[in-house]
Amino acid sequence: MERVQFQQEQMLDELKDLVDKRIFTVAETKHIMKQRSTYEAALVRRVAKKSDFLRYASYEMGLEQLRRKRVERLKIPKDPITLSDFALVRRQFDIFERAVKRFKSDVGLWIEYIQLAKKERARSRVGRITARALQLHPDVPTLYILAASHELDRLSPSSARSLLQRGIRLNSKSVEMWTEYVKMELGFVESLRRRWDVLGISINGDGKTDSRKITGSDSDKDQFLDVDVDMDMDENATPAGIEEAGQARDDELERWDQEGDEGITARKQVLDGVIIKAVMDNAVQALPQIELFESLNGLITTYPSTPILREILISHLDDLLRSTLPHHPRAIKILYTRLLTSFKDGVGSSSNPNVETRRGRALIEGVRSANEMLIHIMSETQEESVCQVYAQFALDWCGQDSVVINPDENLKLYVLSSLQALIHRQKSTSPSLLSAHIKLVTEAAQRGTIEPAKALNTARKYTSRVPSSAVVWLARLTGMKGLNEGFDAVGKIWHEARRSVSPKDENLMRVWTWGVSGDMDHAERLRVYEDLLNESTVINGPMGCYWPMGQTTLKHTYI
Image: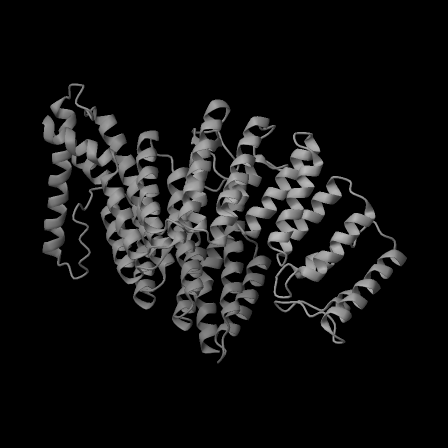
């Protein structure tokens, strides 16, 4: 308990100052002393818990918020600064210091400590904490990102770049690290563009520049980032080496700022994203995974960069995607979605304010280009995962739940005929393509575009082609119901589907329970379940029908 008594003695001066300023009363300070003693006693136990430290820190944070509110309400002058002005925050830091010493392996605790220091604007402390955390956890990307963010807040992008490069070297398989690095370089290019705009430096060589503006002041150079064109990642750099590197970066910035063809060419290359494209190339080479492409795609399409730079980077990303993952389903979706959307700052979907669906003639051209691209890919591979992408494309743009409001009927017929031609040409047995075609011809029959008999005949032909596929049978059953076929006819097809679908199909349960409607009363539902149960025992033996992938039996469903 000596530790508790020592902490109590340390509290006396700050509590006395709080009373002298009339922020807290004597009774309140006694209560604060009692609460702190309780928390301190919990911390000195032989087996202290992380939750004890967090509760104590949370209490001190609430106390500091209350102090600030009362200072504001009582209009207590900020000068002169006394002990109580910073003692509560210092105690929060002390609690977290003791916590991270006790739980060094807890990354979440380190992150909370860093966030607290950033919140209280303790910049030097943030740097020290992140350095210690990175020494203990060099394989945690989040810590590098927090450290780089801190350096950027201090207008030190060179340090941020070095931290991210070091983190990438140790965590080259981290999508988060590569994405953050690209984001930092995007910010760097934007800062240079604004710098040159403010200084009146010509980017395209079509204007005159004042030499005084070109040179700039030392503070200007400190404010903006200097790019490390060689992307040096040597962690054993000496102070002399760092000074030489800094001088080299200053020389590079001067070269970019100068007049003449060399300066204009250098500035144009920077604004055309040469640095960012180099980082993207390295990222794809180190981590050729779809998750990286999706992350970079989301970053580039949402980052507030210039339209020209965004278009250049998207084109480069698409080229990398085509060469790296040409037949990956999610990669194909990214590519065809690009043809159907356009970029317009401030307008777009709720998920991406920079992206909006094309309209009018542009939409028609986009659908045509996307359809041709997908058909070309389908000619190279007939993997079911790729077929699912094309089927979803057709349903998204021409189905009943189309992403386009009131799509043109001719556009629907175009995609429908393309899908039909693809199935006929390849004699496809893809359940995804066949079921999508059944759904689309059924909807066309409901609109009166084609004859219902033709839609029903198409569905019958496809279930004969792949009788073991559950999704094709489900599409046929739903289509018959939508076209108001008779109860007996639908029931007969449902019975045939139950006997035909493969027991290994993951949608087997959906086929068997398709005809069980929520509109049925209890007696009718009970009768249907009994019939299905009897049928399952006949088909699969006395043990009942056992469903794949750990699903329950029909008997269990009935019960």
